[in-house]
Image (cartoon, rainbow, N blue to C red):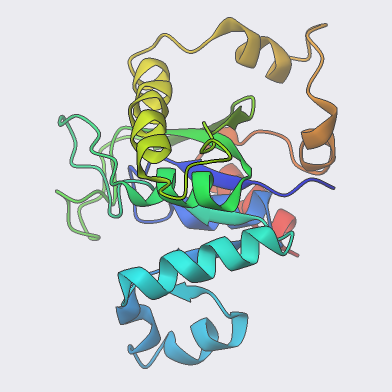
Length: 220
C-alpha cells in the first residue's frame, strides 16, 4: 500500500475523529496540551502521535515517519477555521510534502450548520441536525526540488499556493466533477494507489447519530 500525507481543512473540533476512523493506521500531529491534560496525556503518549511543541522537531519527525512508509494526517491551518473567514494555510504542510517526497491525499471537510468551531462554545448546540461531509480528493504531488538544489524552500513556496487553492475551490462549491463522480460510483476509475483506502472506508456524508455509529464501527 502507498503512504500519503493526508491533509484536510479543519472546520470543527471533531474532524480528526472522522479522519482517524477512515485512516486508522495513520499518525497525526497534536497540540502539546493534549500531552499535558490529565484525561488525555496517557492516551496521546501511548499512541505515539507527534506533538507540535517544537516546530523544528515535529517537522523532522513528520518527514521521518513518512519516509519510513507511514501515512500522516495534518491540518495545514494549524488550528480550526474561523467561520466566514478565508483559509490560511501555514507553510508546514507544503514543507513536509516537499521534503518527505510523498503525495498528498486531500480531504475536504464541510460541516453545516457549523458546530464546535473556533467561534462557538462546545455547549452551543445548533438548532437543527448537523451534517458532516468528508470528500477524499485525488492525490496531488508536490513540486520536488531539482537535483542540484540543496535548499527546498523555493519548491515549498511554489507548492504552498496551489495546495491552498485546491481546498478553496471545493469549499466554494466548485469541487471537481471527477472527484464527485468517483464517490458516486460512476465509471471514473479511482487511482489504484489509493484503492485500498477507499475499499475499506466509504466517504462519510451523513447526519447526527448515524454518523456517530459509522465512525464507531469504522474504529473497531
